[in-house]
Image: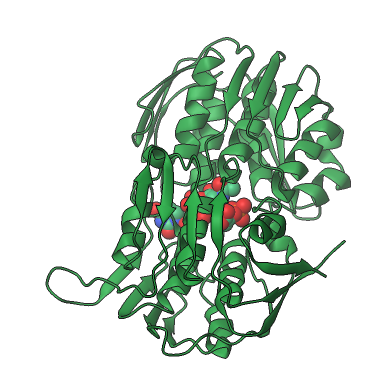
Length: 436
Ligand SMILES: CC(=O)N[C@H]1[C@@H](OP(=O)(O)OP(=O)(O)OC[C@H]2O[C@@H](n3ccc(=O)[nH]c3=O)[C@H](O)[C@@H]2O)O[C@H](CO)[C@@H](O)[C@@H]1O
Ligand SMILES: C=C(OP(=O)(O)O)C(=O)O
């Protein structure tokens, strides 16, 4: 098992790269296989730690899986072992990823009973489950929490019944969980203030292909008419928009020239425009994005001449998962930008490492960092650092690849959670990176 990346930076990266299937969509649609005893085939599954852990959890709870190839799998959830769902093994494995929380909605919807151990995922601030649990309650479930085992148990009693729900926030995994619980409920569920990321849209399309009746897909008002049962289907996962954004940042920061193949441009929302506001040129070639070599790039200002702010917002706003990448790209730009991470409280602390590398950043508070671009006046210096979370990890990796000298990035399990064979793929672009 490897724990660190050794990187010698300063080489412009060049060539073509294909984004993996989307991690956050994979976690939703793979959980949804629990809704039917029939076979569900899912393709373009990313071969990453979080997704492989979720598949292992399903197998251990009794779901039959057949790998057709590295990225395609047939799932069949004919029988579920409910004893396993209360075991230490389930608790400890679930605790390694955030996505495991989405096993609850389909189990509750189909079997009337579910268990949620404290989920894992990035340690980037408080990550509450209120939207999930309050929503399940509104559908008629009761929950109890056992402090000793840290398990929530959910019971549907006489089954779930559709209702109107105004979610307290458009939680991505919360919306997915409630949709999966509601598709088999009696009557109609209306979800207002629902999340509508492409991940959620894809889940809804897959469920409709299985026989569900979900309307309003891609909006924040979903109407779900419950059906008696769902059948099998085939589903293909979209390209990972966070990988696409990461590769745009990688090209700009290393002054490279990269073509991102089959980027799924129509599903990227405002991501490309936000990179353009940082001064990065992007060319669309069919569904590919070409980032030409740029010796420098200049951050735009707002129309009134004031300093640009880039902040996150629920979809169709900018995803919070790309702010760390945008922050690192701004380090070598001409001009200044305020990065405002509204959703998470502890996601910007990694800027300390960028400061050690020679960046000019002021961390105003846990949510806001002002980046004063170096405009290539000097390169960053390679250092030893640890990856605090998945996106900060990749942001630091991009910084290291652009830096002068050698960097050691520790705790790369964080990066492996969400980026498939990243060292191998970066080497194909000319990077000097080794797992040690
Ligand atoms: C497995 C998975 O899919 N993970 C994604 C999912 O996590 P996850 O579904 O856990 O995130 P949520 O959408 O529930 O919310 C994330 C955080 O943002 C806060 N919040 C949310 C909505 C809002 O309008 N205002 C607000 O402040 C929440 O209180 C919470 O602290 O969505 C996040 C937000 O896009 C992404 O970063 C994660 O990559
Ligand atoms: C925060 C993320 O992941 P998770 O929700 O799985 O921790 C992410 O993908 O950026």
